[in-house]
Amino acid sequence: MGRGNERVDRRRKERPPAIAIQASDLDPVSGALRSDRFMVMVAAEQAQRPGALLLIDLADRAEFVAAGNPDAPQETLILMAQAIRQAVRFDDLVGHVEGYRFAVLLRGAPEDLADAIAQRICDSVDDTVFLTHDGISQLDVAVGGAVFEPGEGRDLYTDAQAALDSVRRLDSHRISIN
Image (cartoon, rainbow, N blue to C red; front, side, top):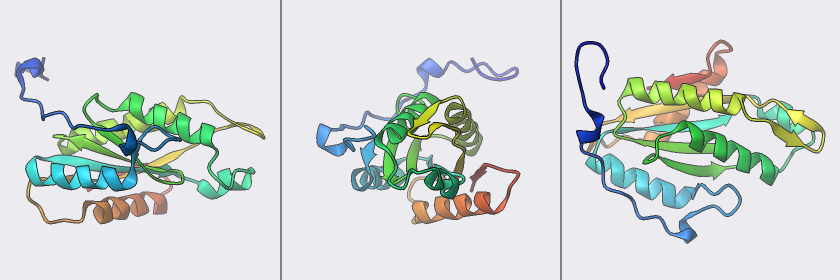
């Protein structure tokens, strides 16, 4: 049901069509979509319906790498991808961009929902135990995002990257959605 006095039955809301994903579209380490395939899907979605693109990255990558993890251990990437998948909706898409960076396409999500899901992603990563060869690591992520309407000619990745960069400059925030 909806919030407040408005009654909305979400089961009757039209859902976007399913996106066909092949095994070759997936990154073999993280299980998320490969970056190239993910960006093609983002472009197609941006042309047809509203939504949001989130970029998720380690907030302090230098500390994690200094702990003896220069090459993004497979186990860490797998756990990060699982933590992100647990925080998003079933029809959202998760892509592995590179290294410790992931992206999420929130299909049909307005800004307030994108912000709520970004917070869930941060909470999910906080609740995940990351084991490294030096022991347990606490990872902290930063999330930058861009909300879009159909047909906008914006470069969503650049906008989400700018939001992510602004989060990194602010010590008190972990999320920025434009």
